Every structure is written in C-alpha cells, then in structure tokens.
Length: 85
Image 1: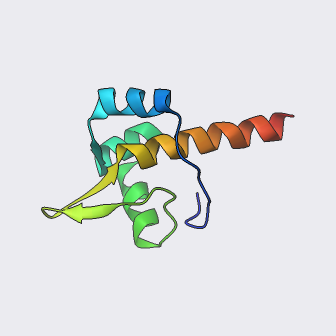
Image 2 (image 1 turned 90 degrees about the vertical axis):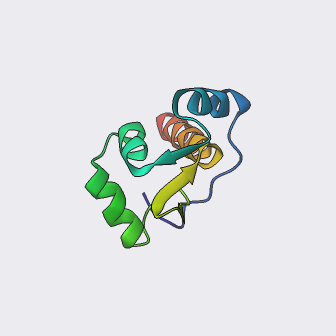
C-alpha cells in the first residue's frame, strides 16, 4: 500500500457493506481486520505516510471514513481484475 495510490469513488454497494458492518468510521483495530494485517502494521504505515486510506484523529483516536475504506476495497478489486486480464 502506498500513499500515492489514486482511488476513485467507491461503489454504493461497497459503501453500504462497510458502513453496515463497521459504522460511519473505522478505528485502527477495524482497519486491521478489514485489511488482514495487524493493528501495529496499520499504525506503522500511517506513521510512515504509506497507508493508502486517509485517516484523521478525533477525540485522541485515529479513524478512517467508511467511504474511503470502501473506495480502497474497490480499488484493490479493480487492480486485481486488470492484473488478471
């Protein structure tokens, strides 16, 4: 994952699926679960500026908006489809 990855808007279906499962914003534990990596890896990538999903701090916790997470999921799928072609 790189911070320079360009993502487009997520499909409505992916947005709904992410929002229904995790709510409007995801914490670092939830991001780790979605991405299949450890929470420490999420935090390290954020710290290194290499995390592909935009995050922000609110109330002393780090969060990502569900729409950005959905866009990343859709981006990964599109990239896999291009590679498979």
